[in-house]
Amino acid sequence: MINAAILNKKRVLFGKLSHLLDYPDKQFLNERYITENLEFAEPDTRMHLEHFWQFLKSKRLYEVEQFYAESFDFTKKRSLYMTYYKFEDARERGQMLAKLKFLYEMFGLLAVDEELTDFLPLMLEFYEAGDWYMDERFQDLQVSFGVIEDGTYFLLQNLKEEEHPYASLVEALRIELKACMVKKEGSAYVE
Image (cartoon, rainbow, N blue to C red; front, side, top):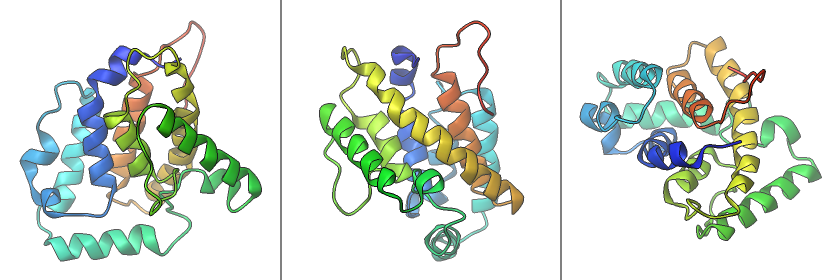
């Protein structure tokens, strides 16, 4: 189960991770943007964001943009579309995309048609901007948590294999998702 109060406190952090996992802009080259306003972040998340900043700080914006495009736009191995790893282009993927779209709309976020609903930055933006807090249907968010957990597991393995700097952001995201879960006795979570 998801702890609504913890997820609500981490809205800004999920927005930051959404932004950092999306196509780069000028804020990427701002240390304060990346390393500040982390009062609700887990300690390891701060470390991973600092590590990501170490990668960015000597780069120009066009270099980061090029690196991002080469990293995520031209390979299926590092897809930011979270259902791709499980379903590739099977019909079940379309059904999951429709479920996610319904979930976003149920909580007041209209997914724009320019991105598929399993695009990781869009999914994280939903945690920041969706009107889900104190809603009786809140636990329906478990669907999106599951999609992100599955997709980021494979994405992280592929990024770590290449010692890719974006692995730090995916690690931070997985830490934060885990922190939002209500731990039941005897349960374990995938790292």
